[in-house]
Length: 402
Ligand SMILES: Cc1cc2nc3c(=O)[nH]c(=O)nc-3n(C[C@H](O)[C@H](O)[C@H](O)COP(=O)(O)OP(=O)(O)OC[C@H]3O[C@@H](n4cnc5c(N)ncnc54)[C@H](O)[C@@H]3O)c2cc1C
Image 1: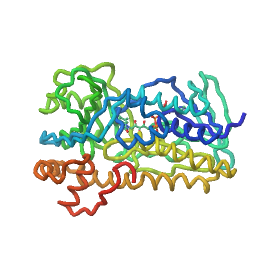
Image 2: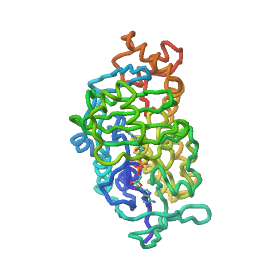
Image 3: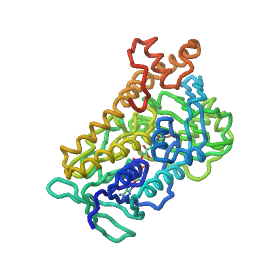
């Protein structure tokens, strides 16, 4: 049977696309190679920009019940100066991906999407330059499925994005992240914490501590492929290095115990984004290099792209035209919704997270200038750059979307 849409990958991007396609009355089959609930290596942070989508999908309350709710951001520079931008109205959630991804996936099924797990897609089927279905393995058995359109949402190591020529490979814009769940993490604040402890982490690399309740936290490292190579270290070396060589690292991790394994994963960022559509297919989330290149957030971007893709595809299917010319509307809409946020965060990366001294200067300024307080961390950065560096950045809008 030919489906209207096949979505490959039931992560946040694919499941959001399937949710909104099904809601629009489109026949949609969501394929996933794993069995849910499954783990996904992540910091587990969901910034407030995710909340409107959670609400639109009817899953906000369930996510909130499962989240550790944090109120702001703390940032430390190489000189061990930790500053907290607290804000009681700024609810950032920290929810393990094993839980939240399953909630998002179930919302697609509740909206009417069909779902098949243990199905690994190995290849897109193309005819005369357009995508017309997928080949894969279902429980190890070869299968072939036809569709009018395919949504490619198979994540950061996307085999299908490779096939389409969209896979990014620039070591300055690819990050590697590693994370572990730790118990007995000490002196945490009521915020998500970012530590920039040494010049080798720059540009933009850091260690995070995202509290999950009590003394339990998701602790990890985020670093460009280029900086990782230069450091001569392995991902799993950084947290012990931080604990043994810095005051703040010792304070947080001196007594901490790793629960389970410390695991790493790839983060392809927007700095190397290529096309994200072709005849009969669109690419969503990490498969389309949609992670922002400054703090490594990608969940809201994957979900916004999934929702936008669903809207464009529902309209295109109604008109019976899924050509590349028609699906270009997807790229245009993604640019419109996310492009401003990417540009802003890229600018913050260049102005504050490339040279350690720039971050030191910013934190020194917020300690002295109360007019920079009362905002989220990224808004305080914009205010600082405008006031002290004549940056001329618009102060309205958020760092994640226009
Ligand atoms: C260490 C680390 C920390 C991070 N921290 C944060 C954070 O705190 N906040 C944040 O917003 N973002 C964070 N991110 C980024 C975020 O995890 C991603 O941007 C987000 O998961 C993207 O969602 P996605 O749906 O595109 O891909 P994924 O979540 O990777 O989902 C892809 C799905 O496709 C499935 N799949 C893969 N191949 C196939 C195949 N061939 N056939 C069928 N199914 C397939 C996978 O099993 C998976 O379920 C982090 C990333 C890393 C690596």
